[in-house]
Image (cartoon, one colour):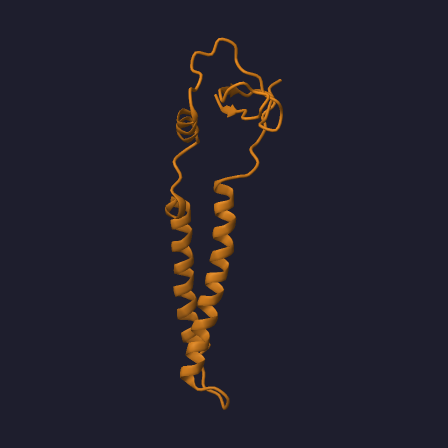
Length: 136
């Protein structure tokens, strides 16, 4: 079961409430005969942390680490392709400048693509809106 907390002034104490067709946006009602009423804010905080779906790993979340490794691999492949096929000397640019320009373009684009992917991925790790399941 999921537990939500109603911390509005209308609720007498910060006690857990079972949700069926309700969500945190709607008024909540206390369960009758609940013997597990939380006494103080420390109990409330520990209950919220322990009742979450899983422990947060932040930047070391498995999917984020694997995705970062994939982008590093793409950067290495892009570097090899850029240095092999696109480095050339012309009248306006030397071969060394062309090599540095290719590396700059590859790694700047890889970083920008990784950054937008990481932001989207991390946003999905902690959604702002939870699904509301309606039982019929």
